[in-house]
Every structure is written in structure tokens, then in C-alpha cells.
Length: 398
Image 1 (tube, rainbow, N blue to C red):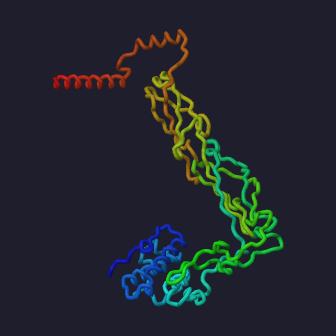
Image 2: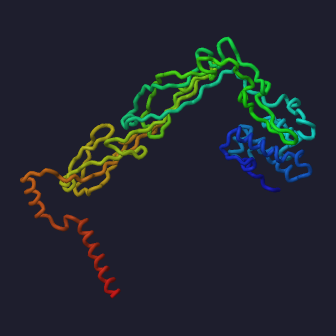
Image 3: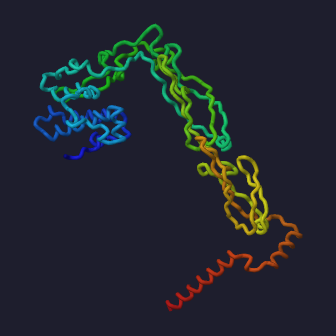
């Protein structure tokens, strides 16, 4: 028995496809391979059945979840397999009248047979008077590094769409109401074409709602919304980073006809710090250290989010040495811990020396030996080897 193809592959959609995308893909395949449109074509019949089985699973949230988790075994249709004879209901989800009219339209004379009358009138528009949720809105907000580190609170002043107070979000002038669309007769769709192939399209006049506004509200121009100035309180949690998205429920665009407002999403951008560099939860800081302190050892102050901390520098510390201070970094946005702080030793050469200081350094320099500078010795040795090889190669060329 041939192995079943992946259902997503059958419909030609991604695994992240929405319900509408799955429905649209199936509708195209059903219209193309319907047996009545391809009489005697067993290949078309098989593809139609394969697409129907795939849609049967992927259009059902529970079956789709089981299929995504367990594959075909999770949606086993039993010993007999998928029963094409028992199930015809899912065709209504993709507008069966469109498929049948495209198959039989020319054979039924004139503009085609009215299958929509047989199956409940076709696709019905949504109730134009029902409450409608407001739109989700987004904005960008630049904050200081310290706000990301310690958290803060902001008051945002925004101009957002809001429900029109004059018409209550209906878009119709007070005392009037929407009326049935004269173009589509309230169906929300019109049929274009004739003969064998007909296409059902959204009504261009009402936009698929099935009704129109004859007398628009003067306040909102018929949109049902006006612009309103609002102040929104925002709490910035500790640990946010550039790209973090904060959601404020119910603070987005106002709804229509009493619908609930949408959400407001704030996309954060964090300014650079004058002290720290950030890498995820870890912070890094350059610590200027005197070469004398690095040579003989000593204590230096290191800035951390919690305040200055003392770092013991061992004798002979080289320039660029890294010291990790555990738990001194950024807090996790999820509250699951704190990063580290990495302190890098950076030699700072003394400036504006006095005559006495210069003399002391000169006395020190006179006491130093090449062995006091192992890195310089290693470089000198490598350079000596390099030039010896160069000289040898030059003799070979001659």
C-alpha cells in the first residue's frame, strides 16, 4: 500500500497556514479535480479524494493538533480508511455552490443552475450591526539603558482611533440605519461570468457586508471612528532589550458598535550605556588599571548595577585580562536569574608626570631586565626565526 503524502503537502500550504489559507487551497483543488468536472479520469478522482481527506483533518482544530503531533496515525480513519461517501459537510466551508456552479453552470442553461438555493443561500455576510473589536495598534519607544536594567514607568500620550460618540460606531447618521445593499441584495457577494465558468466575488459596493450606509455620520464620515488623544500608563519591566514587545491589553484602537478595544503593542529600543556593553544577560565593562598596579597587584573599583565593587588584581596581570563577576549582569525578563558582569583590565598610561615621578620611573627602568617582559621576549624570538627563514629563502632564489 502506497504511503500517504503529508496533508500540508497535498494542499500545498505551510504547516503554519491559517484556517482561511487551508480553506482557499482546498477550494482550488476541489474545483480543479472534482469528478463531475473530470468524468472518467481516475487520476483526477484520486487527487480530489486525497485533497478532501487532507482538508477533513486540517480544517478541524482537534484533528490537526493530533496530526501535527502524531502524523497519520493520530487521525486514523479506521480499517476502511477515509469514507468519501459519508462526509460531504466540509464542502460547505469552501462554498459548495461555487464548485458545483463552475462544474454544471453551462449545462443548466443561461446563467447556470442556482445551487445556492439548494444549500442554504451560499455564504452569508457577518451581522453589520454586531459589536466589532478594535484594531491592535503598535508603536516604538526608545528608553534609557537604566530603565531596561532597573525597570521604570512611563505615561504615553497617543492619538488612537476611538468609537464615534455621535453614531455609537455604526457609521450611520443619528436616527438612520444601514440598508440592504442594492448591488448584491444583501448577500455580500456577486457572481461574475456566464456559461461553464462563473466566479463568486465580494460585492464591490458593500465590501461583503450585505448592507450600506445611505446617510453617513457627519462626525466620523461613515467610518464609525474618530481620533482621540489618550494617556496610557506603561510599566517597563526589568530586563527588556531592544526588540522586546510589551502588550497593553485593551489600550489599542476603539471598537465599533460597543465592541471591546484592541491591544496596544509597544516595541522597545534601548539606548547604549555610557558604562556597560550588553550581550544578552551579560554585561561587560572596561576597567582602567595602572601598569604599576597590574605589575605588583592591588585593588580597583569596578562599577556594577548594584554599586561599586572591589576587584583584587593579582600581581603580573596582563593588559586585557578578563574577570567574571557572577550575578552582576542584567536581570532576566522572565525572572529566571541574572547574568554576569565581565570586567576587562585596560592599562592606562600615567599622564602629566612631575619631574620626581619621571625620575622614579627612570630609576625603575634601569633595574628592569628582559626577563621582566616575557611577551616582548617571545615576540623577539619569533621575529628572529622569521628573518632567518627569509634570508634562507632569498639565498635559494639566487
